[in-house]
Length: 141
Length: 383
Image 1 (tube, chains in turn green, brown):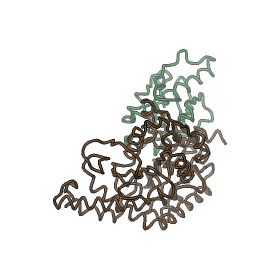
Image 2: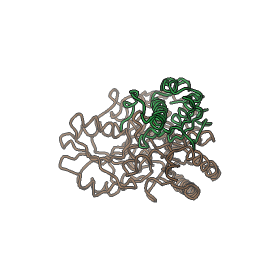
Image 3: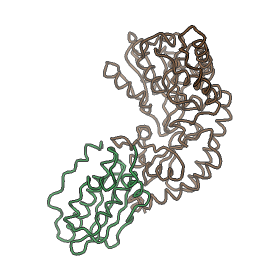
Image 4: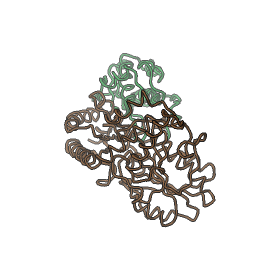
C-alpha cells in the first residue's frame, strides 16, 4: 500500500488544523474504535463558508483527506459544499489506496455534519435529507 | 527498528550464500559431484538448525518459511492422527498462519478451542489443562508473541501434553534465534521457525517434528526432506538459515543482553518523556528486542509515517491497512480498549541497533506524538 505524493504532502503539512472559536457549525463524525474521528468547524457568512478548521484522530489518509477537504470548502456556498463527494476528495489527493477510501467518505460526512449543525443553529432545522453513504461495507464494527 | 518484520542479513550469512550464487546450482538429489556439494551444504545446515533448538538433524524439515511450517504442522500432523481425535487447543493470539489453517480445518470437521490470555498476553497452563478432552490430539500455542513479545509458558504446557500423550506444536517464529529454545527440555513435538527473524534470508524456514511423530506430506512430489516435503531444496536459503542458526547459537547471550538493555533504555526514555503511554505484553517475560506500546489519543499509522520521514522504521500494531480496520486481535485479546488499541506501535530491535539509535528515537518521537495529539479531537476533549 502506497500513498500518493499529494496525500503525503497533506499528511506532513496539514492545512487548517484547529478549531474555530466562533464557529457557525461543527460536525464530528467517526468512531475511535474504527480508528478515525474527524471534527470539522466552519464559519459561514452570507451562505458562504469563509473559514474552516479540522481536528482528526486517524491514519495518514484520514489526516490528508481532512486537510484537503478544508481547502476545497473555503469560499464555497453551502450548496456547493454539499456537492463535494468522497470521490472528489480522493481525486483531489491523486487517489487513495482502496482500503483507505472510507477516509474520503468520512470527510464527506464531516462536511455534511458541520453544515447540518449550522442549519440547525440558524434555522432550527437540519438538512432535510441526508445522503446515503456507502462506507458501511468498509467497516466491521 | 522493525526487525519483527524481517531482520537484515547477517554479513556472515551473506558470505556463506555468495559462493552458492556461482556454484550452488547442483541438484542435491543428483549423485554427481555438483549434487553432492549442495547436498552436503544442506546437511550441514540441517545440523546447524538442529543445534540451535537442541533437536536431531533428521527432525528438521526445511520449508519456505514460518507460514509454511505452521500450515504443514497443522495440516500434516492432524490428519495423520485423525483416528485419535479431532480436537485442537490453541490461543486467541496466534499468528494468522496458525489461525487461518485452523479455520479451514474447522470447516472439514475439526473442533478448535481458542484459549483467552490475561492482560499481559499470557496463556494460563491450567486453562490448557481444562480444555483438554479425550478427543484432543494437538495443543498449538506460540512460543512468543510476535506483536507484544510475551513469552508463553511452553515448559508447563509441554510437560502437560507429554503426560497426556498429546502432540504439542509451537509457533516459535518470533522466538527462535532471539531467545534460547530447547525442544527436548520443553517436551515440544513440533516447532515452526523462520530464518528472517534472526539474520537469515526471507523465504526459508523449518519445521521441527520430533522423531516418532507422524506427519503427512503437505507438499507432494519427490522424496526430498525424507519424503516429507517435496520439491528441489532452496539451497541458498537453507545454507543462509544454517549459518544464521550457528551464529545465533554462539552469540545468544550477548545478543539477548544487548537487545534487552537497548529496549529497556528505549522504554524508560519513552515512558519518562511522553504521557499516556502503555506498554503491551508481559513486563519481564518478553522477547528482548520487543517494545510494543499503546499511545493514547492518536493512531499508530500516523506515528509510523512521521517516524519514517525521520528515517526510523517501525510497525504500527493496529491492522489498519486491512480492510476491516479492526485493531490487532492480539492487543484486543489482552483487553485493551478498542480506541486505545488504534494507537499501537511496535519497536522490534535487532542486533544492528545501537545506543545512538535509541537516543535518536528518544529525540524524534516526543515532538511527533505532541504534534499528532494537537491535531486529535480526542486529546482536546480529554483536556
